[in-house]
Image 1: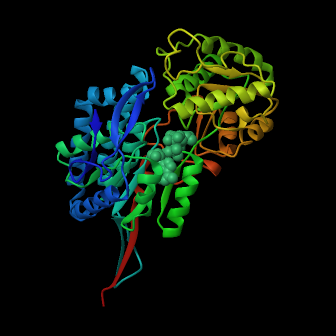
Image 2: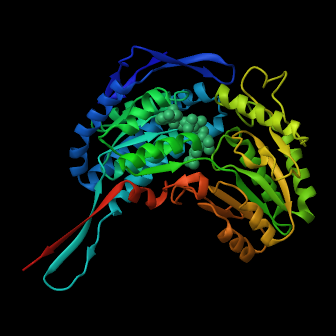
Image 3: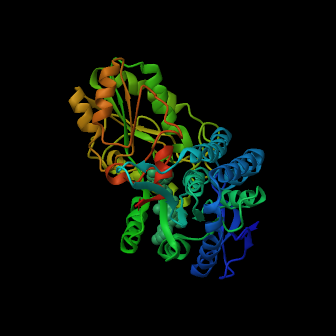
Amino acid sequence: MRHDHWIGGKADAPASGEYLATIDPTTRASGDEIAAGTAADVERAVAAAAVAQPEWARRSAADRSAALHAVADVVESNADDLIELERACTGKIPAQLRMEVDMSAAYLRYYAGVLRAHHGRTIELGAGVHTYTRLEPYGVVAVITPWNLPLNQACRAAAPALAVGNAVVAKPSEFTSTSTLHLARLATDAGLPDGLFNVVTGTGPEAGTPLVSHPAVRRIAFTGSVVTGRLLAGIAAERLVPMTVELGGKSPIVVFADADLDRAVAAAVTTLAMNAGQVCSATTRLLVEASAHDDVVGRVVEAVARLQPGVDFGPMITEAQYAKVLDHFAAARDAGAVPATGGAAYDDGPGAAGLYVQPTVYANVDPQLRVAREEVFGPVLVTIPFTSEDDAVARANDTEYGLVGSVWSGDLARGLRVAEQIDAGQVAVNGGPLTIETPFGGFKGSGYGREKGLEALHEYALVKTISASLH
Ligand code: NAD
């Protein structure tokens, strides 16, 4: 099936007249086609957004809240359609798809709720003066998302941006655009004003770059790779336009010998299997206190070796990602690393037709190895022993990234002490929940800006101070 852009509340054919092919990664069979967007399409989308935004911003918080709740309603009532669109281009397993759609609706509901408590403040400067701040929207916000959690990431950025009174032009990944397109259609059906939420599909250079370069785009939310993030941050800096930069990670999971090892092992296996490791916040470096290393790693390897393709985890979502993971396997092999399990694609059986790779553990690796330093973005875990609390912290921080961390210890004081020393935007201690309410974003090479939580609302609002003399 062919999908056009969604601009101004309706499907809109690409000016180029061209469409891009997608695949079903479970079989490599061809899938839907999406509009090959160009600067001309971006122009129409940004113009529609700029027209729709002022009226939306003037609405009461209660009205905007009701409108976003209505969008959440249609996401929930059309969950099966959204799941099918997402499945067709990502091949994810049902539990993962369900969780993503549920989370997408939850983002809309959360920001529909908290926007009503998002206010400026008065600043007391003495008698005869009235000074206060207003939180004003930027105007048109560009939302550029990757292919690993497409609907989720679109909602994660668009919900707070819309809540504050902005209009959005989204540019999803060219590999996984259809759920975001359908979200925009559903949002229009639910009563969101035409032009408030637009989707232009296409490649990064053809559609994404014109979007972030457009003079009417005043705020950018980017989620994706370091290379693209750096490129777009350069454009944004040149334009003096603020940007949220959500990039990758090589996050540590630190396990002390006194931890509840069953839960720690389960956490390590879950993070490897979830979305087949194609999760920016996956904790892919398992650091274990030396006295427990072999026991913990043995249990992890046993559980990982039992994971079944198509049942417990999905395929790599793009051909390029599949090739990248296989390249990591080859480089690790060339460097002398022997996987404790996995380390290859599937030659036969259920995983062989699609872009599946074997869940893989490299035990007790040299921390300088490429597979131990670079983000693989696949079901690949490396393990490294540590000897003391200080050694654990040093190894956890021995990375250019800083997105998340996880610490497991029977001594909560130690767990918190280590968590406070890890250079990352979020750290869970003994599996503490990290939810929509908890601000998320990088330290170091994982980017800047915060999504989720109340922080995301602040990201999409400009603070204006008005001060009046009453004399
Ligand atoms: P990518 O950078 O290739 O693409 C991301 C988006 O940017 C896509 O929509 C793409 O079309 C667009 N893009 C690419 N080149 C562009 C250009 N020159 N100009 C404008 N837009 C351009 O990343 P990807 O391969 O789709 O995603 C994988 C990466 O995303 C991983 O590194 C992962 O860690 C990261 N990620 C981060 C988070 C987070 O929240 N921190 C979440 C998910 C994924």
